[in-house]
Figure: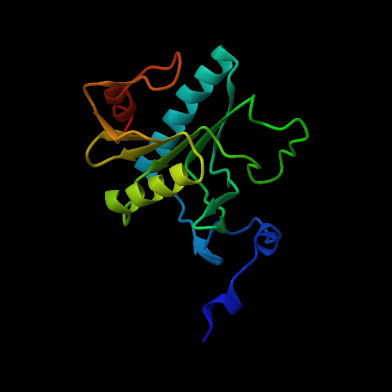
Length: 181
């Protein structure tokens, strides 16, 4: 059976109802599981501190679970990251808030869920970087660390005794992040 015959177009994917959460990967629907307690707690904590930074610095928007339209291996890809940050410089004037993010964000945050591996998230981080994302943070609840991926740089793992300071004017001690779970 020809797999491409059953591939979903970007337009068809975007017209699906919002009731179920899916990502579009290689023309296929991939279910996005609902986060568990630790995952959602870390997601909320990061949302709060990044949003505070955005508001204080008048930088842009941070949003949870906002699908973003990207390209992966020359195909439409619509992942639903745990968090994204988009600067005001990148957001188009005619932006419709009830659509997937129309541009490549500066930052994507993915929190490793049960059933996912660090290797899978590393691969996904690479896909984000190849799609034009500037930074990807992979949050590992078991290791209590955040690995920062940037284009043209080796990944940097920040453990709980160090701070994340890779965004201008933003500092977060990793232990403060994990103290909430």
